[in-house]
Length: 209
Image (cartoon, rainbow, N blue to C red; front, side):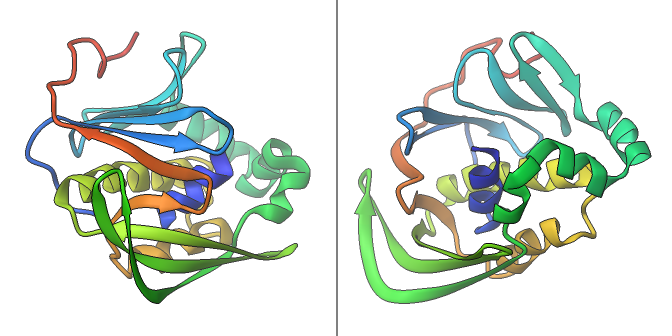
């Protein structure tokens, strides 16, 4: 899931929103990814109540089973070990599936997902195991651009936290961010927008447990 989220987040860039937003995406494994967005420095991304990423006043935290991890503090420890060593241990054999180069091309058609119409692109990710291809549907809807911005920020902060911002792992983020395609509606069968709500986010959702 982490690899998919990093790559999908890398695919787009975004603009700020005007009010609380909650976007729900269906994932291939049956889980749902929920993005609760208040503003660019305060949002929550996760699949369940016990495991999520929290951006609070511009600082990234990871919450796992009630335990809070300050990503910036952990970053110092990771850098002491070395980014390549840490990532090799974290990803293991999956390292060969992490994209190091991404290209995106328009397919010349549109698709409607959850009531929003967007342009269809083909994303090609190159890894040491070969190419991975997937259709991607994006929209210029400003609210979904803001949601995408949250995904992008978490991905970039996670890469920076392990000291890999100058490595091949960061290249896809840079490559596709420059294209400014819009907000994500669908990425292959991995992610599909289910709903986008504008109700106020309940108190306590965007704060440390």
